[in-house]
Image (cartoon, rainbow, N blue to C red):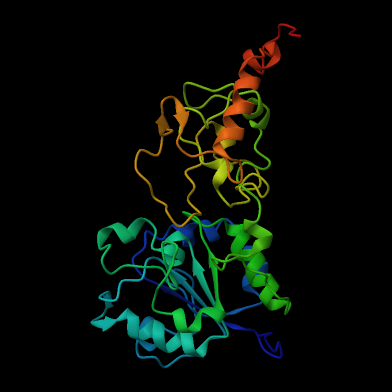
Length: 301
């Protein structure tokens, strides 16, 4: 539903069970002051707003855009008030609801504290379940642990401009989540020729085969829209953990699960048989250029 822009849209930011990671991430948005100038902040846990927290809890305010950060816990209280009641009130007032981060999207990290009851807003991992399921048409999920600041900036600007936001089956904007984290990774050539790396922090080698990298099966634009406009996890030599996906977090994040030396999970859309065939062919070649250091002064073929 496009917003009427005679006045600044009113934004309300609520939190469930959270580490504040998405708030901290958002504050790194390069054009944050300019974006905030276009909005009326009703309430944010850190920013100054037009309403105080007691007014918010008393359901005396209103909003056009509701952002929810953190896992939904139906028993969570703030000042003796159930946050489930507060969320229910403002979710019916809002024209847009943004589930910010993997906790708000799917349950995420804090689902583990009470897995029998904690969920995202409309998904429990990938199962359609949550307190706002009946309002799912309003919900946009921006998964990530934390979500990239540019992703929220993009979404808010699309809303401000009255543009339709196309979403996938998990209610994530396709403009942001149609790519894989693998796309744009500077290690792609190492991946293609199956040159793996045995330790972290190196610029050379692929992290998929031994270090637990989930880039080839994770929907995220981290290597297209860089963090702080500079880098990403794989660019500094640590694996993608697949934090935008419904099954995050998994166990043994720094390890690639294998069956008989074969990765248990293969790149998205590739059959295991095809993957094994291509891997066998690639490993039969030795590319000297890929076996040395990137910054070696010695000339290689």
